[in-house]
Image (cartoon, rainbow, N blue to C red; front, side, top):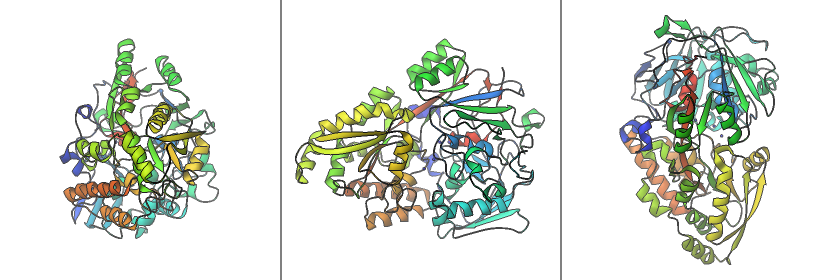
Amino acid sequence: MATSSYWNRLSRQRISRRRVLAATGAGAAGLAIAAACGDSGGSTATGPTRAAAGEPIRGGRFQLGTSASIDTLDPHLSIAAGTALFPRIYNLLVARSPLDPTFFYYDLAEEMETPDETTWIFSIRPGVRIAPNTLGVPERDMDAHDLFESFERIRTDPLANGGVFVNNWFASHEASDDGMTYTVTNPSPYAWFIFNLGLFTSMTPPRELLAGDLEKLRTSGVGGGAFSVAEGSYKEGQGVALNRNPSYYRTDPTNNNAQLPYVDGIDMSIIQDRIGLRAAFQSKQTHSYFAASQAEADELVGDYDVHVGSTEPSFWFVSVTMNVDEPPFDIPDIRRAVMHSINRQEYIDLIYQEGAQANGIVHWPVGDYALPPEELDELQKYDPELSKQLITEAGFDLPLKLKVVYPITQIQELDSHVPIFLKQMSDAGFDVDEDAQDIGAWIGTYTSKSYSISLSLNQIYETPETPLDFHHSSGPLGEGLYASGLQDSAIDAEIDAVKTITDPEALVEAVHEVQRSIYAAGPMFLPIVSAFSRTLYWNFVKNYPSGIGQTQRLINDWWLDL
């Protein structure tokens, strides 16, 4: 289902209205936007934050550790750790940072034009060269025909993560005969169009990889990105390696147009637990580490030659998801009873030590689209006695017996959420049986909606769209996968209407209003908290970008001074 400046000051205040409002969808009719910095980064404005770095050095391999598994390297199907690598391998048309909306990164597109609110014309950048490979893909320039075939695959494959986006919002799309122009027409104005084009779900592999046996995408990959998958390097449960693309199209204008990337490769290792991740970082087996708290970050900075590259709000979260197709969650008061059982401050105190903030239906990192804390305190207040009252008024005896499913994993600190969740539910009048499943089994359970209530992992949601879509009858990815919403036609219509609003202030107010409607109906998807992500790097990692979130993974002018 698939993290873009997280400013350091966000640890002290909410994202400003001005910055977030600027991040909405379609621009004014006739707008033409070109990459001001072309080969260097494709920004039209401020660009990423950098620490003082010195003279670039070529060579070395960046060592990356992750606790998440790699389900597949197929860029259209993966929902796990592989998604962090796709921006390094493949190409996007254009990406826009959701937290610094002045920053555009132009990749396959070197310019875009919107002659009206439903038409998008992209001029394709010449020279986006496919890396040398043994997969039978010619070393040629990527073009608009690759885009067409890629979005057609997304449109027609029922498992593609971007399927709902393409099926709902591509009324038509076409590549020019010469492959240098790609045009998309929306059925109506769409607030989140550019943001969806910049997600990992919209990656464009070469069209040759999409022809014939798609199994090759599971363990290998090549495109016009800065790296390609090293032949034979994918090891299930262990990791994968990427090698430098010697034909990568970008150069560094600050260093005599030196060929990028500077590093020879990236090695991703799967390390299942946080203790192991920390130990690997301390011994320099990995070069970056996500600290669990400010205290841990301070400790490591004090003891080792490392620095905090960025302190950024995370767009992922753990949620409570209720299936309205399964009793008793077809009853709004039972859903409300679960909602009022959640003491978010306890999660913050016990897991994050002030390094997180409480979420409403729309999570706080997306800025003013989230309802203000004082309103949330009333709408979803922690009140276990009210939960008990709602249970009995719905006709059930106390305690109400439920079975909760959840994955066995330390990803997103979910393992730390479980005992807090169970205790709070017990205090609120529920008797909860646990169904702990390995992550693969849980994904299957969650996808097929074979649960009544789940403590759930969630991917990176950079706009309010997906949290709202969980409440839509079609679910967050369409086709009823993961959830089937509230089964309320009025809520569906309100969610659908929000997507078509492109006036910034009107969009914020509409997102607020639909959340209020969902609270009134009894929400079935309850994000708990979103944390701050503190990424530490060894000081030999130079010029690594920050301040633009996941968009930074498209930027490859950093180096290792080993």
